[in-house]
Length: 269
View: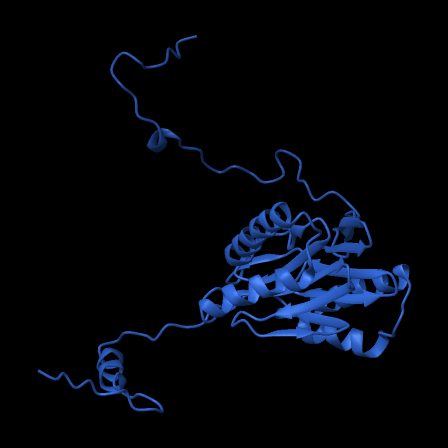
């Protein structure tokens, strides 16, 4: 007996159009993409890499954390900034960091940035963008300073300066105006912090402080809260009101108290 299997036809499939229309008519709303906010950047300078990130974590319109860490450890010479879903960036970078550690133990060699980039892009591509992690990967290896961006779908770019996240356009405007080749360490840190501040002040999803990581040959310097552009100023006067400023017209606490038999307070004195 010969079994004939029909090969699927190429092109788009519209098999679910009728089903989706029926669900829509019944009041079911189609799923929406989650809107996340962050500004992360990276730049190559004369002696290494500078990575930068803001510290605001949002939950819809709510600021869930004012001072979170978005620059993640991958290897002693490699760090990664994460934008998107916080749990996805945290656990994706932790998983790849573990794999890089095993790779170092097996080979006995310093990790290469392209190895971490390949592991990250293959993992993200496998999930077709459903892992919401947009990454800026930077490090210093045998080939010198390396800087990559990795999109949630797994596509990558290798550039001398990069930005990702909802504040990336504001940050990129700073880079395109002020970046130049072979900058000094101080110049690179200044342009990175300025780019992050541009995201903080021009994007509602980014905010709070500026974190910076400087990676050079054989050394990493993590500058936590390098700048705090949103610190509250000292109030000019006290706004506390003295007791008795507002007259109490009536006081009744019986509705909030349950009096049990035998527990009545003695008020005869």
